[in-house]
Image (cartoon, rainbow over all chains, first blue to last red):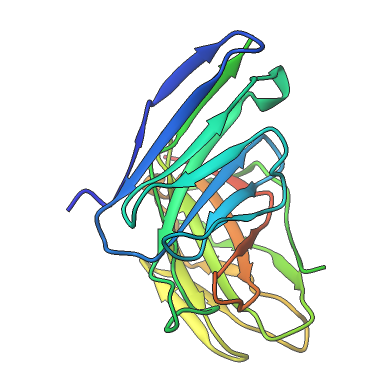
Length: 117
Length: 113
């Protein structure tokens, strides 16, 4: 049981390049999330998927797109990377569904460190 | 909107010292409250949580009590160890079905042997 896995672990991009961050979970969770972590700012939600087939914007969605490929996988795409997107990106999942709500625990992956030059 | 404010770090303590990391929140409803911990090079993991007023969450010697009257959820531990060195995040959930979590900015804790 690997939990939440993310690839790659580290990536360097040039301004304007594109890339996709991959995330997968093996806990049969309904909900998945993408966050970015910047120094002194905690984690900020980029996009989330409450259930398979749905996605919604979070606090900082500009410059990103997501795809909920199936129940296990939730990818984050940067179409044209900018230096402001230099950050550490975390994927998370939670049980979600109708039994979800404010008491749920989110389970985090190890993160992807992205540097945009 | 909902928000979380926690004490700024870094916090440096000697081993076996008493720890308090302050956290206050602003919320319109009745949120659940969490403390997450991030060890170096890793993702966040849940440390403890409380889902209603006066609940006490506890784990690994850490405790926090949900105080609605003071809108606080301070993290405490009676005797810290070097292995407790990490970044601690206070967070709240707004109770929506998607369980979106709002995080504080994090407090870095360093424990000296």
